[in-house]
Length: 412
Image (cartoon, rainbow, N blue to C red):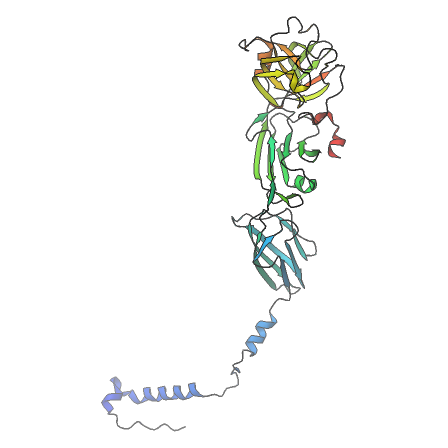
């Protein structure tokens, strides 16, 4: 094409220094003509379907990630509702977090098709989900979602023993009693996790539908540290009734003390680490009021208490308002306690209404009295074993006395 000089312009106005002004104008005009041209073999059509778009589309993953419940869902069930899957590919990463950033444990299946949470979800909680899958070419696809779990109308909690931070004897189980009867015991039991140092197998056993005890096969080893995670928030204990507890409880096992009461010899041998440290004369249940046989765990310590026969079915046979140094061995009312009214019974004859009596003084002021000594040297969770009584063996659920059940029956 021809470019003509622009008329009406002085040479001073277009040259500048060095007299190169016309060349500059020519360059600008050529640029303008080229920029306005519509030709050229590499030009796109303008509809987004050119060569570059096709190449990007061919790189898109064929994997499809699915998340249930759908994004934004409300009142989601705490169990069974969360399902994550992949089609035409395999899941490679799944992250589920609550509002505080705590991750929910789960597992991707061997074939990569599904991810399953390892526990139930908490109630009234918002969760975020991020899931990634790859197709056969290694190309990734991802989905994100948020949902909120239900707010239950009916709830339950568990009251437990021992207390958090306590030091207890070698016979102490972890016992939890629920405020509502449980009809989904497996789900509730799975929501309670127990860790020990050193490691030892611990198993749970249900007594009825509202009490669950955990213990090892044999008495705890002295010094064992026990940690219990109560992950009950959101677990459906019975239809429409959900747990509302999320708590960690820790306790430590103290020195090994087991005391053996012989109801015939009328003695109690206090043993530490299997060695006798003290032998104490005792009195046990008189004929017709025999003391239970078996292994009994101290569950309560009372410096002084009232004992009334009416509370255990013995009418008005006794009412002692100031029994010193009393330690509970059963729910039904068996105690090992100081006794200041027994006269010469200790070591000579059985005179109690089923309790184990140790010589003591009224008011418990004598620290050297057997009742005071044993009280001061005992822990919640210590074991008192009674043998050679004319009564039966105490029931495993009468107090914290599951040791009277075989390990096989305990786990069954």
